[in-house]
Image 1 (cartoon, rainbow, N blue to C red):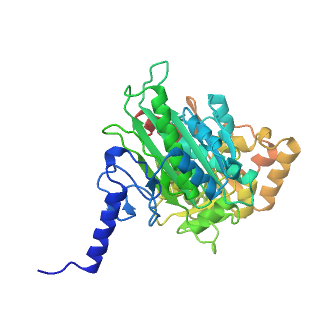
Image 2 (image 1 turned 90 degrees about the vertical axis):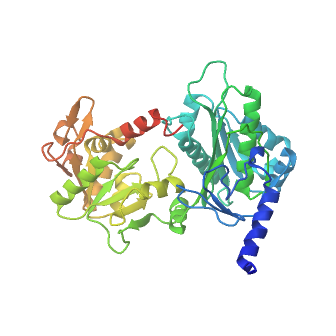
Image 3 (image 1 turned 45 degrees about the vertical axis):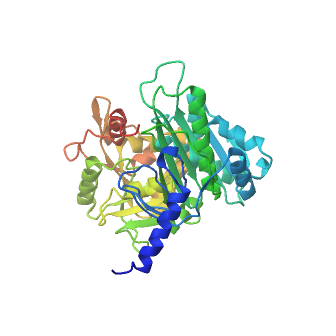
Length: 443
């Protein structure tokens, strides 16, 4: 009989250790970094977890341990990582837990509970498309991270965000659920749990949300302790963690302004740039790029700014998700240029491919703070040799082209319109997202 190989023996020891540290899925441990509980067909070898449909994974992490709330918070405070925490819809118990254990001044920079819709919109720079979703939790975490960087610019900070929909004094159509996310300079992480509806009181659901938030805080600060969650059969915490590539980290930190993906190259800047969110990329975008390439006589590159004038930046999961929509042969750029003045500085001599709605916003004085600032922006764009190729967009029941829009004269001089006969697509990314949400794609 052949003796097992050394590799097999090592794997056996690791699996045995895993079994000892995580004795039963039914206990509902929310294990944190690198572990994805309850996901079908996971391959778990020691502390290495592979999970389907996640852009990038945590690899080797220190083992986590079940602990008490007080001990977990003490470990978090001992780590001394400054953080900002924002929760809505539930989870306020996590704030109290962090502040009632001595040492909070080393950790908690600020805690916020933007509970009313208007308060959450103010915190995020605009109302979210869904108030309880993974995307909203990540937006909250990024907004908290930016706030933490402002409050402690010299420190390695984190932001934690959580949104929940729990038992209330009125019936709820969707599932009771919680989304938690945390953001650092290198990492974006999320966790999600659907709770069995009607199985718990509001207080009991709040306790679970608070424990999930504290586990996320522990993971974000490098603490090894975790709180056990009292889950019912069929309830599973699903987690994902994405590490930004070095150039993506530099982009978020503001130490670089342009990142090339696909066939894009920093040694060869494009002559035609299609700027957009591409959330999601759809057939209308593809047709615009094809028509623009034919009109301009050159390939069209795609550009996504991770910065927004009002909203938090894109996190690493969002950056990678949006880039993956494109083909490897596409030239795709990530930038920190939320305005066309900044885009013109990055892509001098380029023609920007835009929709009629976008060019109309470019010509609105309220985005500049005054007419003189607006005119100065148009002069700078022109001085850099940049122009706009304007495609029609559906507006209500009509299709609006450049000829239907009133623009400042200095901006209109930089624009070339595309006739409706050459391009018309009655489709938008916003409509696609709303349709997906209605079908429950983002529960």
